[in-house]
Amino acid sequence: MFPLCSPIDSSLEASALNCSSKMEFCRGRNIRLDFRELTKRRGELLRYKMDVLKPGQIAGHCRVDRDRLSSELEFMSALQSWSPEIQHLTQADRPLTGRPECDRVVTTPTYIMKLDASVSMYHHFCDFFNLYASQHLNDSMDGDHPGSFHRDKQVLIWENVPYRSAFAAMFQVFSSRPIWSLNDVIGQRVCFKDVVFPLPPRMIFGLFYNTPLVPGCRQSGLFHAFQRHVLHRLGLPLRRTVADDTVRVVWISRQSRHRRVLNEARILKALRKQQGVEVVKAAFTHATPFVDQVRLVSGSDVLVGLHGAGLTHMLLLPDWGAVFELYHCEDPDCYSDLARLRGLSYTTWEKPELITPQNQGEHPELGAHEKFTNYTLDVAETVRLVLHSVAQVRAHPRYRSARQAHEALQRPARDEL
Image 1 (tube, rainbow, N blue to C red):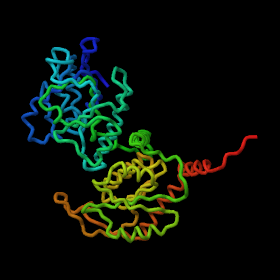
Image 2 (cartoon, rainbow, N blue to C red; image 1 turned 45 degrees about the vertical axis):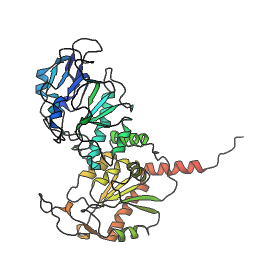
Image 3 (spheres, helix red, strand yellow; image 1 turned 180 degrees about the vertical axis):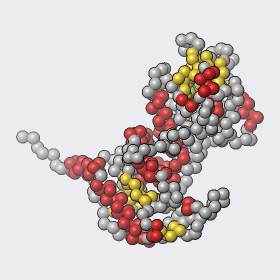
Image 4 (cartoon, one colour; image 1 turned 120 degrees about the horizontal axis):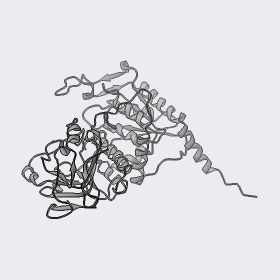
């Protein structure tokens, strides 16, 4: 972090803005954003736009380091940094603590978020995971910013449409307040007493998305902590004991046009005949409450599904969990990398001669592609690979410890002499 805008004096009214390299994370105090001109753009969708702010529409009563600002604008992209916005930073003539400089003063700590894609669990969790990591960044730095992990914070989405998502419950993890969009501040000069511009979802060499993994790297402590934090804030228990030897498998049944398993019913029938395995077919839709989805997955051991955003649920599996991506559809790294980061066992299809596509698949722009068709899987081979994942769960040291912990609780207490 470096001071991009240094306080003019030591008073509480002074402004300040500190940023990381390439403007990937910034935090400030007494910073003004001028949204008055957005009244002329009400009919325009501002998502992913890089001109929401114009010169002079972000300001602080502080000294701007112009040379450093110019040198840090390399990642001029909507979702890679805050450069499109911070480049317009100017020095205000007077303190920004009330009128006439501000039409509105927000005293609640505020996180301003650019979203990737709220319709997809994978892409929306790029947002949530980076928001979680940003809280750690904000909490680890000196200064007068309040504790980052309390829920009395305001989230402002950098879009001019109301926020709606099947995964909206995830914001309960971070904030107890209603989510704002730009519609809530349009037409006003808003002064933020405490503001954070968190890590954006598509950073170069970022977290979750575009994470560079060296060979052998796995089991990120940050991903481990994220799982626990989410379960805690959603009021769901962390599994510390396992009551019996039954391994619980969640089969994600895709309801979309593409990447469906055409002989799914036959496979599920065969799996349910396996001893010591309990299989649940999960047809998650936008109508399925997200907390119910998390409750099911976090209480299971193995997650099975074709390549798709539903596999992002793996982040909420217990530490001994296993993932079987039925087929990666020409994208072999996406979910295998995510499993490595979470520290889970990962399996995918091994014998291409035992999987049959419905057709070659057709994307309107890309042409033939394996993500745009459906598949018939060899039943026996599918069962074999599911049982392989089941065996990985049973062999995991933490699974065995959880079984032993349950057995210890069942032993009658011995009377003291």
